[in-house]
Amino acid sequence: MQIYTPVHTPDWVKHAVFYQIFPDRFAKGQLQSPYRLAAQPLEAWEAPPTLQGYKGGNLWGVIDRLGYLQDLGITAIYFTPIFQSASNHRYHTNDYYQIDPLLGGNEAFFHLLHAAHSRGMRVVLDGVFNHVGRGFFFFNDIVENGPHSPWLDWFKIEGWPIAPYDGDRPPNYGCWFGNRALPELNHANPAVREYLMQIAEYWIRCGIDGWRLDVPFCVEEPGFWEEFRDRVKAINPEAYIVGEVWTNTRPWLNGTRFDGVLNYIFAGATIAFTGGDRVDPQQVGDRDYEPTPSIDALTYAEKIQLLLHAHPWEIQLSQLNVLASHDTARLLGLTHGDVETVKLATLLLLTFPGAPSIYYGDEVGLPGGLDPDARRGFPAESEWNLEILRCHKQLIGLRHARMSLRIGEYRFLGEDCKTYVFARIFEGDVLIIAVNAGDTYGKIDLEAVGTRLGAQPGYILFSTQEPVPEVSETPEVEVLVAESAPESAPESLRANPLESEPIATEPIATEPAQSTQPDPIEVIWTADNLFLALPPRTGIVLG
Image 1: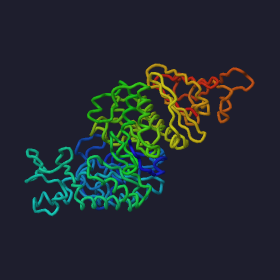
Image 2: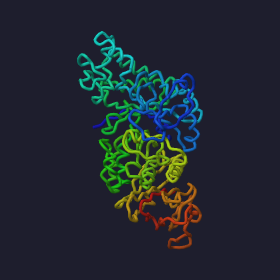
Image 3: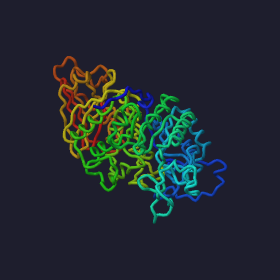
Image 4: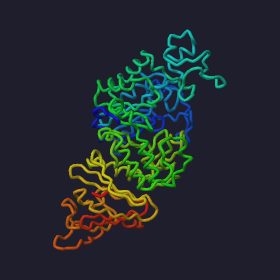
């Protein structure tokens, strides 16, 4: 039996919308002296990314884009590593106390931290505490001095001579998955352990709002992550601790280690359902999150129910829910540019319990396959997909506006083939979310759902159909309501109480942006039952 320690997770995370930034690729700002004095032969921003090339994005550029992020509805930023490193992704840490000079150094970071906090945005940093880069001072001393170095016990030296650069010889030291560029730290050494704890404490005291922890499952020293949590939370009980754990998440979320994990289990199931056979297995590669094969609504429901019951509700509300990251292909890349998959998956992301995280550029339709292609430069505004951007902005706005979408109960209502329906409920605020991921009309009867919900939501707050309406509007929809329609429903949606049969109201329509009208959506309440008919590849939110 799994035993959970009573746990408190940060309240702000439950209401947050995260934005993941890969700093070298998001925005270029003007570097300050002395960094701007150095020549910088950079890879062209628009060119396909390479494994080793730098494009020159920096933290000053992020500061310049904070207004854009705030307008999008972002309330928290997660940065992939920003510490001094000899790699564009900066997972090869050379100095944990210095921000990389190409990003603007410590000065740029503290300006960014202040600017973000002044806008009510939180900042979470990426902690890479399993391994370091070859330029890390303590390891570099071993490279220079061999067995005479005083830092031998900081690493897992296996023999002499070590070979950090000679690929024809074994490295002779423990390194992450055999990559000699990433020597692993010896966490059994108390000095190493204390050093890493002090790094975590230092940046929390500097004002960061949490840590995203890279490959924590590789740190096998007993008690390490428990101590990490205790020491971080002692400084700031509301600091967010989230781990990169793709599978078998229960041991990490029992109340003694992390507040949440990157929810790749949700991502895989959601992509397999919404993308179906459009998902290219070659773009999945060896990533262990199962976005293939295609699944129907019943299988999706089973996966989601297992996920929701895997952890206490307090933990579920602080999961970091994703659809893509720097470690996966982007959704457009996975599906060869299928916009409808992006919109349907984004609808499920923004209506799921836990904190949604948007990978930079996904909101404007930035494509990309597996690494390094998923790390392209943020596109010019002329290249933005406005349909995808409107979808994100409206769903983020709806999430901020409705408490039920953030902390409300998640209740599965029904499924049929590729149509999936659920509700989010909080203190009388009842929303129904329905998604038809199939290529034909999805029709479903939900019996006695009005009684089960204590409400009859019948007004479309959001639809993935184009033209995308404002949150207060609704696309063409035929609605039939019974006399038990809620008082909160618009007057045009209420039944005539003098009639014994339900009355069809006039269709509610918004002016189309294009001449082609979308296929009609049917929402029909008869007595206590709800009938839905959704056009192919359509999702809606009813309120």
